[in-house]
Length: 225
Image (cartoon, rainbow, N blue to C red):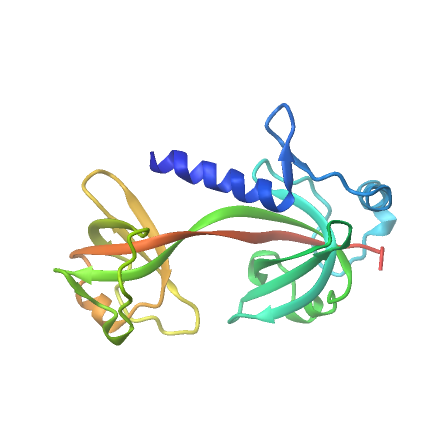
């Protein structure tokens, strides 16, 4: 049931935001205008339209990647190497924000910021992220004064905590995992505290929710600027 809900959610997330699927189940973007279609075709077929702002070569998207063409209108630093990149899709009259790990695409910070107000091709993955809302050991929250009120819509998993070997040393969260006897294992991006370190390897209960996220895996600048 969990796996079914996961794939259904990812499908709906991608469908609502960007398009639909064709008869073979492959992603098919919403119908663009004639002008936008011409632009995308030009970028696809002519090596001369691609600026060498990065060390990346043009490539085909993988089966899981979704391809889009739009204008970068803002780039926000969310703690290096993570950024929030917002694109405008004029033909659809919409804007949307994506997560980007700049180290994962071999692009320099300086080059990335030169792309503001420029048109680019991006590939991204539409995924579900587990959001830790509370973590408890023997019925007591480990979040102290930040303990939230329980929400009936949250999911929960009880199992052995791993990955909380030490407190998070930097500005980015670490990965912790909760595994139960049924073979289910969930991973969370979370800042590890001393309270979590104290119960690493012990049984905890995590209350969590799921959020749709879009992670950029590839950026290609266009000469359409």
